[in-house]
Length: 311
Ligand code: C5P
Image 1 (tube, helix red, strand yellow):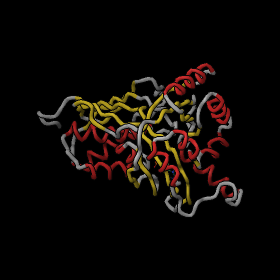
Image 2: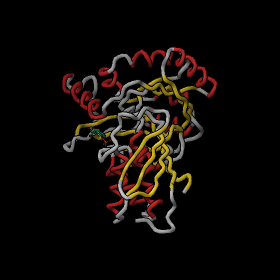
Image 3: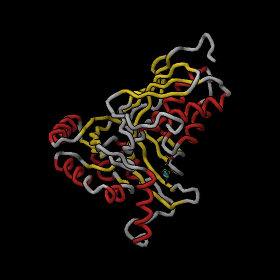
Image 4: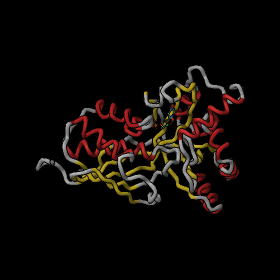
Protein backbone atom coordinates (compact mmCIF):
# COMPACT_ATOMS: atom_id res chain seq x y z
CA UNK A 1 0.00 0.00 0.00
CA UNK A 2 1.38 3.43 -0.91
CA UNK A 3 0.41 6.83 0.41
CA UNK A 4 -0.89 9.52 -1.96
CA UNK A 5 2.29 11.56 -1.41
CA UNK A 6 4.64 8.71 -2.38
CA UNK A 7 6.60 9.34 -5.60
CA UNK A 8 5.80 7.01 -8.50
CA UNK A 9 9.34 6.18 -9.60
CA UNK A 10 12.49 6.69 -7.57
CA UNK A 11 15.81 6.59 -9.40
CA UNK A 12 18.87 5.73 -7.31
CA UNK A 13 22.45 5.07 -8.35
CA UNK A 14 25.32 3.22 -6.64
CA UNK A 15 28.91 2.66 -7.78
CA UNK A 16 31.01 -0.38 -8.53
CA UNK A 17 34.33 -0.67 -6.69
CA UNK A 18 37.94 -1.60 -7.07
CA UNK A 19 39.93 -2.98 -4.14
CA UNK A 20 43.20 -1.13 -4.64
CA UNK A 21 44.59 -3.18 -1.77
CA UNK A 22 43.25 -6.44 -0.37
CA UNK A 23 44.96 -8.59 2.25
CA UNK A 24 43.17 -11.74 3.29
CA UNK A 25 43.73 -13.07 6.80
CA UNK A 26 42.55 -16.24 8.47
CA UNK A 27 39.45 -18.23 7.60
CA UNK A 28 37.06 -17.68 10.50
CA UNK A 29 34.55 -20.14 11.93
CA UNK A 30 31.64 -18.41 10.19
CA UNK A 31 33.19 -19.23 6.78
CA UNK A 32 34.35 -15.66 6.18
CA UNK A 33 37.91 -14.39 6.08
CA UNK A 34 39.28 -11.52 8.07
CA UNK A 35 40.33 -8.93 5.48
CA UNK A 36 41.95 -5.50 5.28
CA UNK A 37 41.09 -3.64 2.13
CA UNK A 38 41.20 -0.18 0.58
CA UNK A 39 38.11 0.37 -1.56
CA UNK A 40 37.70 2.97 -4.25
CA UNK A 41 34.25 3.63 -5.76
CA UNK A 42 34.46 4.12 -9.52
CA UNK A 43 32.28 5.80 -12.13
CA UNK A 44 30.84 2.54 -13.38
CA UNK A 45 27.44 2.60 -11.72
CA UNK A 46 24.21 0.69 -11.37
CA UNK A 47 20.95 2.63 -11.86
CA UNK A 48 17.92 1.35 -10.01
CA UNK A 49 14.41 2.64 -10.74
CA UNK A 50 11.88 1.59 -8.15
CA UNK A 51 8.13 1.81 -8.67
CA UNK A 52 5.26 0.84 -6.41
CA UNK A 53 3.90 -2.69 -6.83
CA UNK A 54 1.98 -5.24 -4.78
CA UNK A 55 4.75 -7.85 -5.03
CA UNK A 56 8.57 -7.90 -5.45
CA UNK A 57 10.04 -8.15 -8.94
CA UNK A 58 13.12 -7.12 -10.89
CA UNK A 59 14.01 -6.65 -14.56
CA UNK A 60 17.33 -5.68 -16.11
CA UNK A 61 18.39 -3.32 -18.88
CA UNK A 62 21.72 -1.78 -19.90
CA UNK A 63 24.86 -2.91 -21.70
CA UNK A 64 25.61 -5.97 -19.54
CA UNK A 65 23.97 -9.26 -20.57
CA UNK A 66 21.76 -10.01 -17.57
CA UNK A 67 19.77 -12.86 -19.13
CA UNK A 68 21.19 -15.42 -16.68
CA UNK A 69 20.71 -13.36 -13.54
CA UNK A 70 18.27 -14.63 -10.92
CA UNK A 71 15.13 -12.53 -10.66
CA UNK A 72 13.57 -14.30 -7.69
CA UNK A 73 14.18 -14.26 -3.97
CA UNK A 74 17.90 -15.05 -4.34
CA UNK A 75 18.57 -11.81 -6.25
CA UNK A 76 20.41 -9.43 -3.91
CA UNK A 77 18.29 -6.41 -4.88
CA UNK A 78 15.08 -8.32 -4.11
CA UNK A 79 16.65 -9.43 -0.81
CA UNK A 80 17.46 -5.78 -0.05
CA UNK A 81 13.89 -4.63 -0.78
CA UNK A 82 12.36 -7.43 1.29
CA UNK A 83 14.76 -6.80 4.19
CA UNK A 84 13.87 -3.10 4.26
CA UNK A 85 10.14 -3.85 4.06
CA UNK A 86 10.47 -6.25 6.98
CA UNK A 87 12.52 -3.81 9.04
CA UNK A 88 10.11 -0.92 8.39
CA UNK A 89 6.91 -2.97 8.66
CA UNK A 90 5.95 -2.00 5.10
CA UNK A 91 3.25 -4.28 3.66
CA UNK A 92 3.51 -3.58 -0.10
CA UNK A 93 6.13 -4.47 -2.70
CA UNK A 94 8.22 -2.87 -5.43
CA UNK A 95 9.18 -3.33 -9.04
CA UNK A 96 12.88 -2.71 -9.61
CA UNK A 97 14.32 -1.90 -13.01
CA UNK A 98 18.09 -2.19 -12.86
CA UNK A 99 20.25 -0.66 -15.56
CA UNK A 100 23.43 -2.71 -15.26
CA UNK A 101 26.84 -1.32 -16.15
CA UNK A 102 29.00 -3.28 -13.69
CA UNK A 103 29.93 -6.80 -14.86
CA UNK A 104 28.10 -9.71 -13.23
CA UNK A 105 30.27 -11.86 -10.92
CA UNK A 106 33.13 -9.65 -12.11
CA UNK A 107 34.77 -8.71 -8.81
CA UNK A 108 33.54 -5.12 -8.90
CA UNK A 109 30.62 -5.34 -6.51
CA UNK A 110 27.81 -4.96 -9.08
CA UNK A 111 25.27 -6.96 -7.07
CA UNK A 112 26.28 -5.04 -3.94
CA UNK A 113 25.68 -1.74 -5.77
CA UNK A 114 22.23 -3.01 -6.83
CA UNK A 115 21.42 -3.78 -3.19
CA UNK A 116 22.71 -0.42 -1.87
CA UNK A 117 20.78 1.58 -4.50
CA UNK A 118 17.66 -0.53 -3.86
CA UNK A 119 17.74 0.23 -0.12
CA UNK A 120 17.85 3.97 -0.82
CA UNK A 121 15.28 3.85 -3.61
CA UNK A 122 12.75 1.79 -1.63
CA UNK A 123 13.22 3.91 1.47
CA UNK A 124 12.28 7.00 -0.57
CA UNK A 125 9.52 5.26 -2.57
CA UNK A 126 7.81 3.82 0.50
CA UNK A 127 8.47 6.87 2.69
CA UNK A 128 9.95 4.59 5.35
CA UNK A 129 12.57 7.25 6.18
CA UNK A 130 15.05 5.03 7.97
CA UNK A 131 18.16 6.70 9.36
CA UNK A 132 21.45 6.34 7.48
CA UNK A 133 22.71 4.14 10.33
CA UNK A 134 19.72 1.81 10.00
CA UNK A 135 20.18 1.55 6.22
CA UNK A 136 23.89 0.85 6.70
CA UNK A 137 23.01 -1.84 9.21
CA UNK A 138 20.74 -3.49 6.61
CA UNK A 139 23.49 -3.12 4.00
CA UNK A 140 25.84 -5.02 6.30
CA UNK A 141 23.35 -7.90 6.61
CA UNK A 142 23.13 -8.18 2.81
CA UNK A 143 26.83 -8.70 2.02
CA UNK A 144 30.41 -7.74 2.82
CA UNK A 145 30.67 -5.13 0.03
CA UNK A 146 27.18 -3.60 0.33
CA UNK A 147 28.09 -1.03 3.04
CA UNK A 148 30.88 0.32 0.84
CA UNK A 149 28.57 0.65 -2.20
CA UNK A 150 26.35 2.65 0.14
CA UNK A 151 29.03 5.10 1.38
CA UNK A 152 31.30 5.19 -1.71
CA UNK A 153 34.35 7.44 -2.06
CA UNK A 154 37.52 5.87 -0.69
CA UNK A 155 37.42 3.78 2.46
CA UNK A 156 39.26 1.17 4.46
CA UNK A 157 37.32 -2.01 5.13
CA UNK A 158 38.16 -4.51 7.87
CA UNK A 159 36.37 -7.52 9.38
CA UNK A 160 34.59 -9.09 6.40
CA UNK A 161 35.28 -5.83 4.53
CA UNK A 162 32.12 -4.34 6.00
CA UNK A 163 33.66 -2.38 8.90
CA UNK A 164 34.37 0.90 7.16
CA UNK A 165 36.37 3.98 7.92
CA UNK A 166 36.66 6.71 5.30
CA UNK A 167 40.14 7.38 3.89
CA UNK A 168 41.46 10.69 2.63
CA UNK A 169 41.93 10.80 -1.12
CA UNK A 170 42.91 13.60 -3.46
CA UNK A 171 42.14 14.03 -7.16
CA UNK A 172 40.85 11.47 -9.61
CA UNK A 173 42.45 8.20 -10.63
CA UNK A 174 42.04 6.95 -14.22
CA UNK A 175 41.15 3.27 -14.57
CA UNK A 176 40.77 1.05 -17.60
CA UNK A 177 38.74 -2.09 -16.95
CA UNK A 178 38.97 -5.24 -19.04
CA UNK A 179 35.84 -7.38 -18.66
CA UNK A 180 35.88 -11.14 -19.09
CA UNK A 181 33.14 -13.04 -20.90
CA UNK A 182 32.71 -15.30 -17.85
CA UNK A 183 32.07 -14.71 -14.16
CA UNK A 184 33.93 -16.03 -11.13
CA UNK A 185 32.44 -17.21 -7.86
CA UNK A 186 33.80 -15.28 -4.88
CA UNK A 187 33.57 -18.25 -2.44
CA UNK A 188 35.43 -20.41 -4.96
CA UNK A 189 38.32 -17.93 -5.25
CA UNK A 190 38.56 -17.63 -1.45
CA UNK A 191 38.63 -21.42 -1.07
CA UNK A 192 41.29 -21.68 -3.77
CA UNK A 193 43.39 -19.31 -1.64
CA UNK A 194 42.79 -21.52 1.43
CA UNK A 195 43.75 -24.62 -0.54
CA UNK A 196 47.03 -23.04 -1.62
CA UNK A 197 47.78 -21.92 1.90
CA UNK A 198 47.16 -25.44 3.22
CA UNK A 199 49.23 -27.03 0.47
CA UNK A 200 52.19 -24.70 0.83
CA UNK A 201 52.11 -24.50 4.64
CA UNK A 202 51.34 -20.81 4.16
CA UNK A 203 54.85 -20.11 2.79
CA UNK A 204 53.64 -18.73 -0.49
CA UNK A 205 50.33 -17.22 0.51
CA UNK A 206 50.67 -16.41 4.21
CA UNK A 207 47.50 -15.51 6.12
CA UNK A 208 48.51 -12.37 7.98
CA UNK A 209 47.57 -12.74 11.64
CA UNK A 210 45.72 -9.45 11.58
CA UNK A 211 45.75 -8.09 8.04
CA UNK A 212 46.35 -4.37 7.69
CA UNK A 213 46.29 -1.88 4.86
CA UNK A 214 49.85 -0.85 4.01
CA UNK A 215 50.58 2.74 5.10
CA UNK A 216 52.01 3.46 1.63
CA UNK A 217 48.58 2.82 0.11
CA UNK A 218 47.00 5.45 2.35
CA UNK A 219 49.81 7.86 1.49
CA UNK A 220 49.40 7.31 -2.27
CA UNK A 221 45.63 7.86 -2.01
CA UNK A 222 46.14 11.02 0.08
CA UNK A 223 48.67 12.32 -2.45
CA UNK A 224 46.39 11.48 -5.41
CA UNK A 225 49.50 10.14 -7.14
CA UNK A 226 48.83 7.29 -9.60
CA UNK A 227 52.55 6.43 -9.90
CA UNK A 228 52.79 5.96 -6.13
CA UNK A 229 49.54 3.98 -6.03
CA UNK A 230 50.65 1.73 -8.91
CA UNK A 231 53.67 0.67 -6.84
CA UNK A 232 51.52 -0.55 -3.96
CA UNK A 233 48.42 -2.04 -5.62
CA UNK A 234 47.96 -5.47 -4.08
CA UNK A 235 45.34 -8.20 -4.07
CA UNK A 236 45.73 -11.51 -2.19
CA UNK A 237 42.91 -12.95 -4.33
CA UNK A 238 44.87 -12.39 -7.53
CA UNK A 239 47.03 -15.54 -7.28
CA UNK A 240 44.08 -17.89 -6.65
CA UNK A 241 42.01 -16.16 -9.37
CA UNK A 242 44.88 -16.60 -11.86
CA UNK A 243 45.28 -20.18 -10.76
CA UNK A 244 41.63 -20.80 -11.64
CA UNK A 245 41.70 -18.74 -14.86
CA UNK A 246 45.34 -18.64 -16.06
CA UNK A 247 44.57 -16.72 -19.28
CA UNK A 248 43.89 -13.58 -17.21
CA UNK A 249 47.65 -13.29 -16.65
CA UNK A 250 48.03 -12.51 -20.36
CA UNK A 251 45.43 -9.74 -20.08
CA UNK A 252 47.40 -8.13 -17.24
CA UNK A 253 50.59 -8.43 -19.28
CA UNK A 254 48.97 -6.91 -22.35
CA UNK A 255 47.82 -3.85 -20.42
CA UNK A 256 51.20 -3.35 -18.82
CA UNK A 257 52.85 -3.60 -22.25
CA UNK A 258 50.50 -0.90 -23.51
CA UNK A 259 51.17 1.84 -21.01
CA UNK A 260 49.27 0.83 -17.86
CA UNK A 261 51.17 1.79 -14.71
CA UNK A 262 49.95 -1.48 -13.22
CA UNK A 263 47.25 -4.06 -13.75
CA UNK A 264 45.52 -6.21 -11.18
CA UNK A 265 42.58 -8.54 -10.72
CA UNK A 266 39.69 -6.59 -9.26
CA UNK A 267 38.37 -8.25 -6.07
CA UNK A 268 37.81 -11.94 -6.75
CA UNK A 269 37.96 -11.36 -10.52
CA UNK A 270 37.79 -11.87 -13.39
CA UNK A 271 37.72 -8.12 -14.25
CA UNK A 272 41.24 -6.75 -14.68
CA UNK A 273 41.70 -3.15 -13.49
CA UNK A 274 44.52 -1.08 -15.00
CA UNK A 275 45.70 2.13 -13.42
CA UNK A 276 46.73 4.78 -15.97
CA UNK A 277 48.95 7.81 -15.41
CA UNK A 278 46.42 10.24 -16.90
CA UNK A 279 43.42 10.49 -19.23
CA UNK A 280 45.51 10.39 -22.43
CA UNK A 281 47.29 7.22 -21.46
CA UNK A 282 43.97 5.69 -20.34
CA UNK A 283 42.50 6.44 -23.77
CA UNK A 284 45.52 4.91 -25.54
CA UNK A 285 45.32 1.83 -23.37
CA UNK A 286 41.60 1.50 -24.05
CA UNK A 287 42.26 1.58 -27.80
CA UNK A 288 45.10 -0.96 -27.59
CA UNK A 289 43.10 -3.42 -25.49
CA UNK A 290 40.00 -3.01 -27.68
CA UNK A 291 42.17 -3.79 -30.71
CA UNK A 292 43.10 -7.04 -28.96
CA UNK A 293 39.35 -7.80 -28.89
CA UNK A 294 38.92 -7.28 -25.18
CA UNK A 295 35.80 -5.61 -23.80
CA UNK A 296 37.15 -2.46 -22.21
CA UNK A 297 35.56 0.39 -20.26
CA UNK A 298 37.17 3.49 -18.75
CA UNK A 299 36.27 4.72 -15.30
CA UNK A 300 37.47 7.31 -12.81
CA UNK A 301 37.50 7.17 -9.04
CA UNK A 302 36.67 8.00 -6.39
CA UNK A 303 32.97 8.77 -6.89
CA UNK A 304 29.91 9.16 -4.66
CA UNK A 305 28.22 6.31 -2.84
CA UNK A 306 24.55 5.43 -3.31
CA UNK A 307 22.29 8.42 -3.88
CA UNK A 308 18.87 9.39 -5.15
CA UNK A 309 18.93 11.02 -8.58
CA UNK A 310 15.24 11.72 -8.93
CA UNK A 311 12.03 10.91 -7.18
O1 C5P B 1 29.49 -11.23 2.01
P1 C5P B 1 29.28 -11.89 0.70
O2 C5P B 1 27.94 -12.57 0.61
O3 C5P B 1 29.52 -10.98 -0.46
O4 C5P B 1 30.37 -13.03 0.59
C1 C5P B 1 30.31 -14.02 -0.39
C2 C5P B 1 31.27 -15.15 -0.02
O5 C5P B 1 32.62 -14.70 -0.17
C3 C5P B 1 31.17 -15.64 1.41
O6 C5P B 1 30.17 -16.62 1.54
C4 C5P B 1 32.56 -16.19 1.65
O7 C5P B 1 32.67 -17.49 1.07
C5 C5P B 1 33.45 -15.25 0.84
N1 C5P B 1 34.00 -14.17 1.67
C6 C5P B 1 34.99 -14.50 2.59
N2 C5P B 1 35.53 -13.51 3.37
C7 C5P B 1 35.10 -12.22 3.25
C8 C5P B 1 34.11 -11.89 2.31
C9 C5P B 1 33.57 -12.90 1.54
O8 C5P B 1 35.41 -15.66 2.70
N3 C5P B 1 35.66 -11.28 4.02
